[in-house]
Length: 154
Image (cartoon, rainbow, N blue to C red; front, top):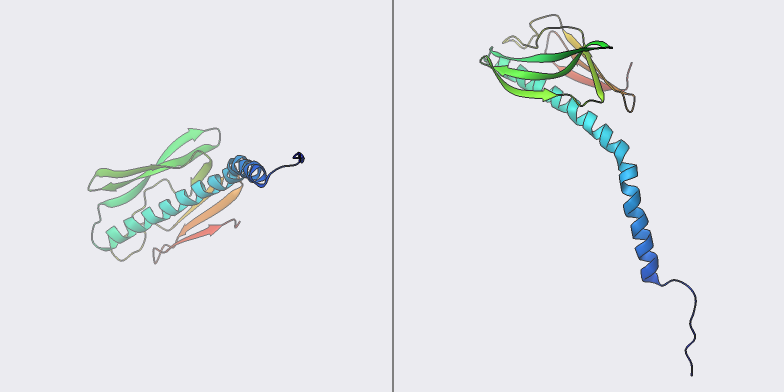
């Protein structure tokens, strides 16, 4: 008897081709998600740092504050980052990702009183992800010091 040769693909060949196609498609699919995750992480870190300063101030450390780092460009004066100052020494410096446009209402630093109120009338920070058109609004309530984040609201 002579063996006949059948035409077609084996199961292993099909699995290998499907696996290769899946591996090639992962970077394309996940790039947009990575940009969203970077923006979300930066906003959450910013809010966490505001809450850190709030806690330090309400427990008596009045020398702790958050100060913005600004840049002047064609869009005007925008915040590119911030640093946390403790006892007249910068302890932490954070720069926002380049795809985030951050604008705030005041040029001052964020500092709370020992009763939890802001040392000025309140703060609203608008953060726009220019790659995905996501929009964040970070609001610090002047009386209670509560920090709220709203995403994609006008």
